[in-house]
Amino acid sequence: MLDGWRFRRGLARLAQSDSPSLRTYAQADWPDFSAPARQARFVALDFELDGLADNAHLLQAGWVPFSAEGIVLAGAQSFDIRSAKRLDDTAVTIHGIGEQRARDGAPLADVVAALLGDLGGAVIVAHGARIERGALQGAVRKLHGASLPVRTICTLAVERHLSPRLIGTGPYRLGAARRRHGLPDYAAHDALTDALAAAELFLAQLRCLPTDQRLGTLEAMTP
Image 1 (cartoon, one colour):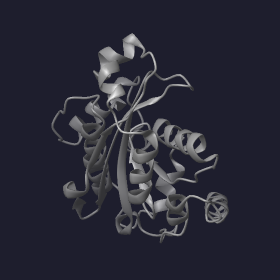
Image 2 (tube, one colour):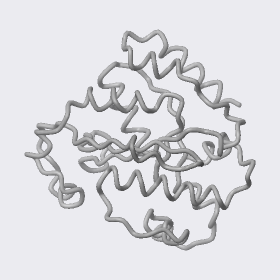
Image 3 (tube, one colour):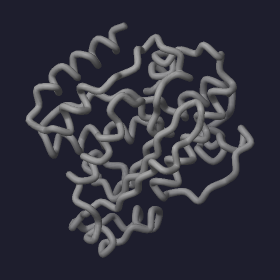
Image 4 (cartoon, helix red, strand yellow):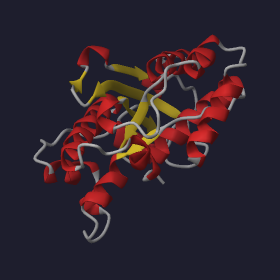
């Protein structure tokens, strides 16, 4: 599988990094792309950003580890991320993180190091995973000048696979998808809450997929 070869090549490069957190990430025990998804380890991840532009900066990160057996709430992490920049007023009204709160957040380097410590050997799960993947890779590039290979499953893409004929984008939003699987509504735009919501949704989606569903097939759905 081409994606698997690229991922392994990226890990080999990362293993030569001067950063201990990047080397540990690269040397983790990663699941085979052909392994059953139900045997893998996952981390549901969400970022709150100052808008959706390519140069938007991270304001909050939340993640929670889980597997097909359940969600490990004791491993949940949530951080406000320090920023001294002028924030986008429209984004502030959505995520509620104002400039004073952003100035009091944790340094980006500390948050990324903690996150990488939990991500080694795990597949990221997120709703609209392209955003989380790009934000994480951008942060690592900014901090370390390195390209971070990541493995992701997008619950939005999986939901389109399970329910392919719904009209418009609304039915595929996180809340709408959760309701379709009988899951409760959560308040949106808090990173940890959204990460937990994505983890629960993916576990519900797994129950709708074949018991031998391969991990790489789900990863290939991610745009």
